Length: 335
Image (cartoon, rainbow, N blue to C red; front, side):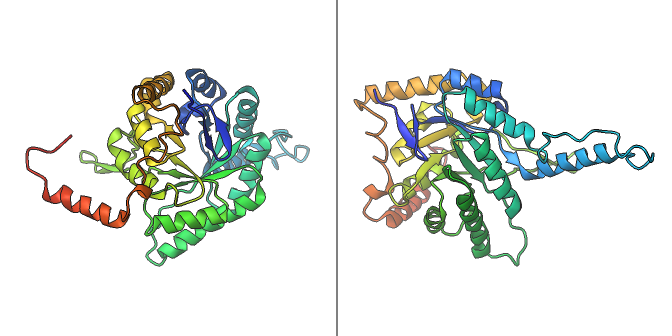
């Protein structure tokens, strides 16, 4: 059975990747995932805001009382290896890339043009096999158009692509007016892959305290259809790798995403619920499904059910939308 796949030009033993999470924030965590059978890991994101916060705390600590005595310029010695609040993260990338036999993909979540470029270069120098650009921005200003949001995203990709040599992917939100158009533009800007999709902060309101609560529930397989549709629509339409990143609970979702055209399937919530060892369970389940259905490789099923198999995908989607609404019988909803 041939499970090998390619993602961002990287050769992977199989298509199941451990995506960014607390499990991938430490070397020990990533070792556990490799031992459990992950074909690659996406390291926990490097957030530019956290770096700035660490810089501020460091400056306050080292400068506190520095002018209280004429003979003391500072109470604390300068740290020669202090690297703008990012040294610990980069050291973990460096150690992981040296210790693991699987690719270590860095995840970068920037906020400024300078931050995207500087930290992308730092991650490359630390030994990351690739960089996933986690573009998380919620436009709240009515004066900012959709075109402007897309322009900013494309600018980030162009600048990072020009500053690093390793492959880059873009983790996108699903909320774009014309996702296929943006996807094609991102590829032209230098993205080697797209990760579909990012999950946004999901607030709630505590009715007892009337306070907003911070929440990001673990995903479930109910979130699969959104990514499944877009993987299927973009497969063969954009010249880049496609990573599915929502609702992966078991090998069932893995197989569905591969049939839709995904190159890799990323999972986090299932591993947080069941432990890293669940990765091996999913891989074994994929092998079993392929054997039972007489397929000899992952390549043999990839894209078998993507939108290129449909003569008029737009009409097909609309027809199924209409049918789903008109054929519904109360009390007989299919689970």
